[in-house]
Amino acid sequence: MTRLGANQHRRNDMSMPNKDEIKGKFKRAKGDVKEKVGRVTNDPELIKESQDDKSAGRTQEGFGKVRRKVGDAIKDVGDAVRD
Image (cartoon, rainbow, N blue to C red; front, side):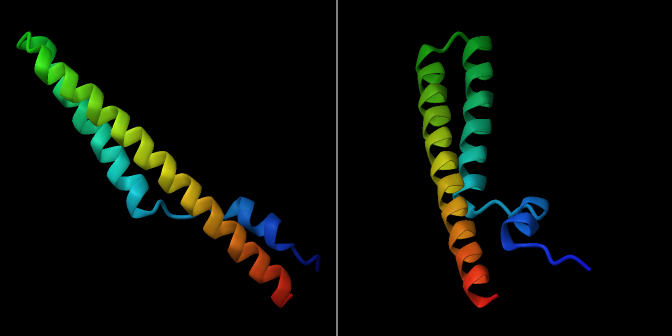
């Protein structure tokens, strides 16, 4: 039986998104809704808010992804040391 290394196992095992990724996705979705409502109601202020929400969501989601990947890398190092 062949033993899989920590990195090989990790590729098959997706990590769960963390709270920053989830909140970022929610902000982006909220921005999409605001944009559509702003365009239907011809409200430039709401359209501007939607852009701000989407930008903040992308930033928070990106931060969450980096945070998760760093955590995964630390776990992989710990697994390699333990093995």
